[in-house]
Amino acid sequence: MQQFSRGPLTGTITSERICKRLLTTTYLVALLAGGVSLFGQQPVSIVVDLAVSRGTWNPAWTFFGYDEPNYTYAKNGRKLLRALSAASPSPVYIRTHNLLTSGDGAASLKWGSTNAYTEDAAGHPVYDWSILDRIFDSYQQTGVKPLVEIGFMPEALSTHPQPYRHTFPVGSLWSGWAYPPKDYHAWAELVYQWARHCAERYGAREVESWYWEVWNEPDIGYWQGTPQEYYKLYDFAADAVKRALPTARIGGPHCTGPASPQAANFLRGFLEHALHGKNLATGKTGSPLDYVGFHAKGNPRMLDGYVEMGIRSQARNISSGFEIVASFPELRDKPIIIGESDPEGCAACSAKTNPQNAYRNGPLYSSYTAAMFHHTLELAALHKVRLAGTVTWAFEFEDQPWFEGFRTLATNGVSKPVMNLFRMLGLMTGERVEASSDGAVNTGRVLEAGVRSEPDINALASKAQSRAAVLVWNYHDDDVEAPPSSVKLHVAGLPVGTTPVLLRHYRIDSGHSNAFTTWKRMGSPQMPTPKQYAELEAAGQLTLLESPSWLRSTGGAVDINFELPREAVSLLELEW
Image (cartoon, rainbow, N blue to C red; front, side, top):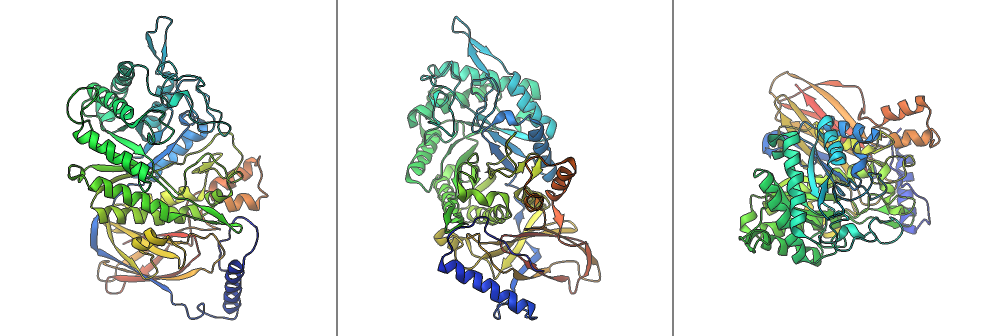
């Protein structure tokens, strides 16, 4: 039986949605009657040529982040870090907020603390690295590396310390941690002592492989100071890191999406300061800038009971950021890290309170992320910039209901479908090779209108020695019922002769690599039995669509035909 994606919510059915359902019903009648295609619709043709290289495969997807650093060393946090490390042959980087925030180390939504800096009765600094060490030791022990976010402001250093801890989702998020320091030299000394401690504890060579940054989104409420005060904050922190370890890599400003004029102006202003302005810590010209960071988000919304994604907005933010960086000749070869690159902006806002976030539990999150990664690579090539990382701002929340609809990679220790998209990407290594599809929505069209008419059915492909991998997705902005698409995949560039080719076909859809479907079938238990938990864990792993099979190439090529449901992703792995 063919599989169909279904919108996760119910609501008013419009005439447009009725038409879509009628189309699906007509398709099913034709299918049951023995029809081969939908009203003569031609299969999507995807051609991969392993002999045509598009350069080294870019594993920029291996960056992840979250607000709550204390979840790092929780049981399920460490489990997820190990899973991320195991998924990638390249280093995995973790970015977290609140690494310098004051508090007792207890986490809550959008909150965490380490109490690294306090002052004694005489006002002298007291440094305590114990919680930070626990976080960074967890990174080391699970095989990942930090993108160290220097922030937020310790209570004892804040110019406006009270109230200090916010009460999200009630009240203002911007409390005492968001303000400038009362003493920039004390701020710099804190950063210097921290960076020196890291180099001593983990070794200079290890810390050289990390990235550092100063603050988060200083163009909005996260920074309750002026742009000039942020420049000063950055200059003092960057100088302190470089004094502790001259070979450390630091960058910024990790502003919000540059498609916004305000964010674009902030990014330009910061880059101008870092390249040509007076360093407010040293008095010299310019500030250390080893990479450029900015953020990019989409904007899903609810339409008549179903989710409509906003991939256009995310693509526009990425394109605008790349364009701004490329406008500075000095930055042509500077790495860029998209410090948060997501379908929308609030990981801790559940689908229960924000129904447009219902995409997060099912395969739509996977197909969106696959398509967006492709368009990000294409935009980097278009603007001729060097993409180093795209941070998926998603991790896990401890002690929350199962499949609550947070933007997470796992729930209660069980991988969600999107985690399997990253496992698929981890199977892609070597060099990127040419892939084209007559069902693709090109990046220019996505920038103009998103994916609102025909679906984006496209592919990325890689080759490493005697192994190739082809990632194929069927993405549409609208999470509504739709018939699957027939895909005809032609892979050329294999050895000419009779060499057999082993095919492994992995799939993410409603019935594969999808613990959410399994959980719902169980009756949505909030306290699964041990047997149910084991079943959910297994369902959350990357699974094969069918048993591995041997193919015979003809003239150095093979043809593979398959059905791909809407919002599904396939990874076809070939070995010879």
